[in-house]
Image (tube, rainbow, N blue to C red):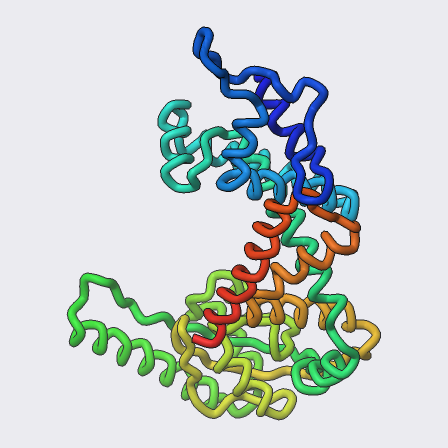
Length: 338
């Protein structure tokens, strides 16, 4: 163990001009062969630095940099790492099988190594998010606010879900879809036929017939929504309801990934001021930037490394690191182009 620690110290204590620095006991023996020449720490390091040393070095460097840059997130990162390890142990109660699975899926040889990886990944991802947010421009913010931030509106719906299973034939699935659509149309007609109080009828039928358990007891109320709050599964519903006037019933049945919806738009509220949603917009734009540009994550980490004045003094490792960064960015750019 002492020799391994010495090896790691060698990685940390690199100094200039293409020469690998020596520990005071640089000739310590790692493996002996009687009277033959032994393998020293220096011998082992020289061999390893062409294969494994860079990865180890980057890990050591990044832990140091990102713990210093984001100290408030250290505890959160540690808790996440502990949680992930506990999940692993629940899935593989037998320790030997756990190690086998860990190596098979991650090529990591110990639980501690996996925990350290999760810990560092969390800090790195946080750094990338911060970098992406810092690079969001005022013009982007204003454009997003204009095109995507809307007023809130009260919305109610009645959901009818087709009773479709994977075991059904295509004909059976079509029949189930048609039945759900016709049921929704019948409910819509019943609401329209009520001339005096459409809203009261809507709420009554929502409680009786809606298959959305989360909203039926509230008369189908989805609460206040904006153009982004319901997510992609309800995008068609969102698009249609924002075309309606306040306090009006949608004239048809809206189909989404979930099922068929009868929709009622209630009152609308004033659009929030830019200053009140600016931080949320920046976070959204930063996340979108990272999703669109796979190289941005690497550029972010490189930014913080340079900011910390990190310099790899060993010329061989410095060259490896430069190639690693260039290739990572190139591969990400190529994937984006493809």
